[in-house]
Length: 271
Image (cartoon, rainbow, N blue to C red; front, side, top):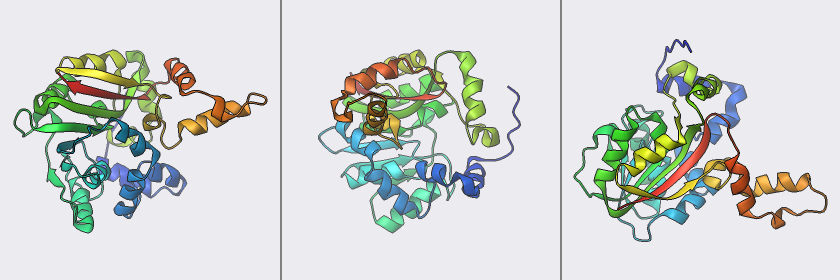
């Protein structure tokens, strides 16, 4: 697929924000302003509520890898974690600059480091939690990135990698990229096969505890929820309430989803 990229990630997002017909997408992606409002909406939303089920019980050092505008760093710090936001883009709109503004406005003690995940500037066994939201599929070298995550995690520490784009076969990648609203502008999107994610994480010494398919959790479903899906199913069935539809049914249906770029999340523990 021949593509001519002619802008940066910051410029691509600014372009998107100027499209009046994309206001819903801008809000769903937390690109809206003021940033503190977007961060608070994420913190109080269904996705973060589902993520919290997998957080370690003891707050310690946490790395928000690929932190973007800092919405997850805000959530982690608000939960009491000693949070480091790792974001290589210096942008005041979508990168480290935006996190600095958020830190100043909120007073939260978030540390900010501008570096790539494939070369983490931390000692071994530093973090009890490494959290990556939509970050692994941006890796220049996924296996190297996962090995670095495994290196800096403490033994027994937790990896939570959410909303990662998955393809069933390599031929599906251009289909996914062709439909992505910003890839044609800046060229930074990617997706891997599920086996590639699993192999890269496990080869880093991280045992996978949960692999959440597209319908299995509100983490992947945001901006909708499992309740929304159940209500949609119930409307198609006579005399059936959404309350009668079990979560396991959504898990089963999610296994059959082959949409290029569908979302999976991974929860693992360093062994």
